[in-house]
Length: 60
Image 1 (cartoon, rainbow, N blue to C red):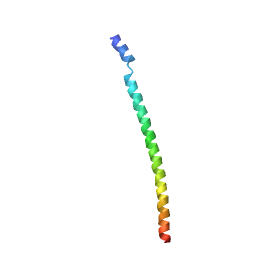
Image 2: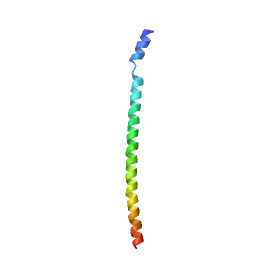
Image 3: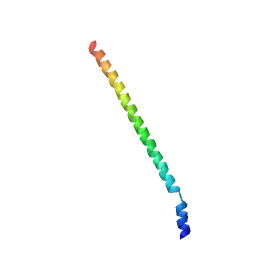
């Protein structure tokens, strides 16, 4: 019985899986944050272009 318990304590495959899961979660958060920031920046750019086009259309 003590051999089984000792082998269980030495087994680190579960810890490795948890570490990989945490790394994947952190990468996902970074990608979502980057995509959100880029999306907001693009939205502002296109809103500015739309405003300028509407102003130019109204002037003509």
